[in-house]
Image 1: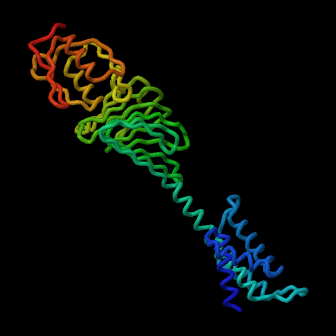
Image 2: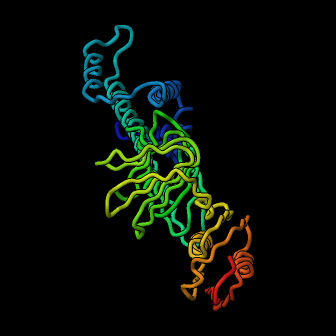
Image 3: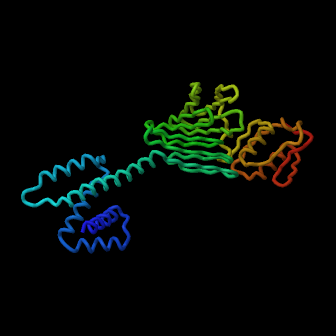
Length: 331
């Protein structure tokens, strides 16, 4: 008899936990319909489980306290009805067991919330994505971004290798911090671009709107506002600020370029970065040729042809490589 009672308790436990098979559910249903006593027993356990599962209560499982309550009931049976010691023991064990299951369920859920993580890695293509907090990031080619949120510490953290433009969902209670090697960028309600490739000698931050704090653990760094550019020299471990807005900093995202009396060398660098192109200059004499021109989401081939025509240069194309050459240029 005890073995049968134990079996039905196990089946009921599986049903209440949502882990029962179809056959187990049918067995429990048949057992419930056998008597009013069985139905009352099931409903009592179901009530305990429902109360324990409620999000509105704070669950604390204390097996010793439960056992003490059982012993009190054993010593003080109700005069109207004999105490069924086995039933009391099973209910007490059920409370502890169900409580433990619910505790573990919500504990695991809390741990998952505290360790939210998103990894974005790009190769030859850019990518735009929404982070777990609702902020957005446009990630340049050959970059890796790891977003983590620690609910316990209320900190949003991004580890960046490469380049990305961030539009941060500002929350003063949940700081948003970017870590790029030894430097940190803390959002203060912002849209900003971070360029931090491991092979580069500098880390560059351009603020489009709002403000950021650009610093290291040992250096308070710079407070940057909209239109300002901050540079960190890795070798010197020093910060510097440039107040002139960089019009082409987001060209990898927008494919919009504004060149004002720019030299050919810097133009080629910008195009290579934005298009992942292989444009080179054949001779020194044309590197300093200057050009004023705007491009708005044009094809790379069109841009190359316009530059060559304007500066009277020749273009040689070999596979995916483009080479500018010429005797000189008219500025």
